[in-house]
Image 1 (tube, helix red, strand yellow):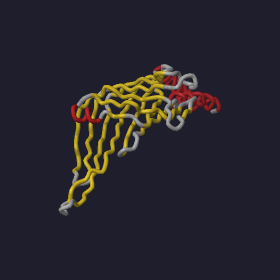
Image 2 (cartoon, helix red, strand yellow; image 1 turned 90 degrees about the horizontal axis):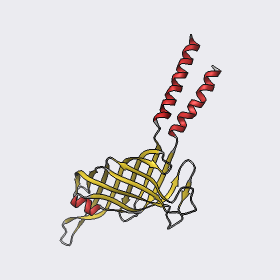
Image 3 (tube, one colour; image 1 turned 45 degrees about the vertical axis):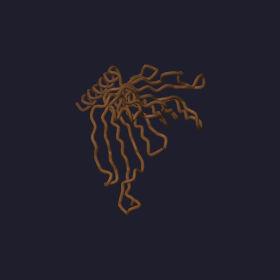
Image 4 (cartoon, helix red, strand yellow; image 1 turned 180 degrees about the horizontal axis):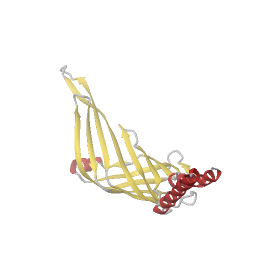
Length: 220
């Protein structure tokens, strides 16, 4: 049994290391090309979104007030379908837009003072993404005492799944979510996790089979 425990410990560590590498990028601001995309069905683009914090296995960085660590860009997503729900009288109208494949890049703008290289840090693609736009309304009485619907503000959220590679060549996959409420700056988070290589998975599977064989022989 002691041999079994000793064998299982490194395999457990291997399984943890295969899945534990994660990176989180927090974004702020940016301009989403809403008008062109929603009205004409063109390519959706997000530009100028600032990276304000980065955390990962060996790096933890936070930008000073008014500064940025890098930028995030989304390009090339074409509008596929759209649906509308709600009404002005009901208080809100929500439009949901599904976009097709596109690309995403994260770049580091710091030079010489960072543990990651200057330039492109992550390059990836996504198969689909969803944009949800909600317009809120309230009812007021006009000068003649009749109720009218008044626009109160817009909220939007852009979300999708992505795959790509870090500057180290490591394969990563994850999600991104960027949203904006009213006139506040947009905020978002991109979470990326290591995609285990086939060789790592094969090694893990082989080790697990070895444990199973050892347990079987011990019971015999």
